[in-house]
Amino acid sequence: MFKPQNISDSDIALNYVDTLQIEDMNKKNKVPLNKKAFSTRAIHAGQEPDPHTGAVMTPITLSSTYAQSAPGEHKGYDYSRVSNPTRKALEICMSSLEEGTHAFACSSGVAASSLVFEFLKPGELLVAEKDLYGGSLRILTKILKPRGIHVQLMDLSDEDNILNIPKNTKMIWLESPTNPLMKLINIEKISTFTKKHNILLAVDNTFMSPFFQNPLQLGANIVVHSATKYLSGHSDIVAGIVITNEKELAEQLFFWSKSLGPVLPPFDSYLLLRSIKTLPVRMRRHEKNALELAHFLEKQKEVKKVLYPGLKSHPQYNLALKQMSGFGGMLSFYLHGGRKGAFKCLNSFQICTLAESLGGVESLVEHPASMTHASSPHPPAESLIRVSTGIEDIEDLKEDFSQALKGC
Image 1: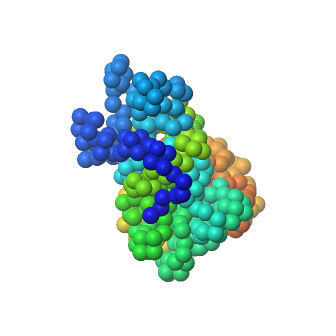
Image 2 (image 1 turned 120 degrees about the horizontal axis):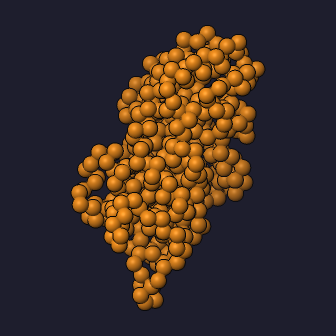
Image 3 (image 1 turned 45 degrees about the vertical axis):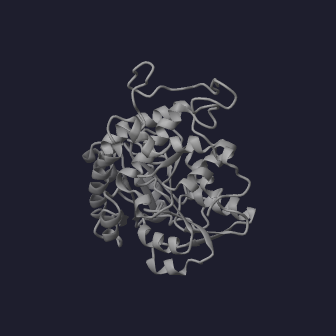
């Protein structure tokens, strides 16, 4: 159904794609990990002790090439752009955590997104949520549109708009919660529409991580992460992940991955595996701090409105309870003082760091209108501040926000 032209079985390399399947992982492990809890899979999925040395931690395989016993006969690896043992362990782990079957680790979040956009051809239509990460909007408007791909931005958080999506759409791209306005999209409802009209549904799950949300289980075809963020958690890796539970899509993604080469290096794959082991612990603390900080900010006279799905004041709070298992660590808020007040506040923090990106253990604050979303066709309000809530002591964070907000 989705198979692109000019791809042969040898291009797809079915034997490699099959090795990424979760069923294969469960056969090799002593216990069927797909039946184990998230925290257990985060530590063990795809990460058995090394069969040659007994090393508990997955080795970093730096080799670019691999010996073959005969022409075309090898042990599953021939060239590291195609497949690498360290990267494969990460891909198996992420497949498990997102309840998928195949994953592809990329050199950045936008590289992962670009891999998915390969499904689009000139003349086809992409519908996207209009409140998106600025880098995604840049790809849509500055790269895809000039190539002849039609792009339509819609407010998909309004469920009445779902029926207005053109039936000839090839792909729907969304985030939930959105960046930076923290709007939620009913993924299950959109997936019912996309299945009826044979539309690919791709969800950027960066804000929630697989710990709090699994879009494949809600009907999405593809999930994308900027693994730079919560999956890394320490602001020291740039990476991206694409996951699917459909073999036909995986075959094509593998072909494009090996042909275009946006793959994640072995050392970065190792670091990401290392970080994912603590993802559940970190996400619980991120959420706990964010929820308490959101309640605190709602009481500050300088704050006009707080945007966080864990607040009962959020217009889609009930959807958050249904669709997610937690509320995450991201929040945004509007100040009464406009741009001047926002800049004063951002320049006054002592613990929080003024910086782009998110998902690290340290709290980050930023001004979307002049930073992450400066190139957006519809930049956010100048009074909006986005917060990536870290895992510091919450009382220290509240004290920092209290002093930074004074006079804003």
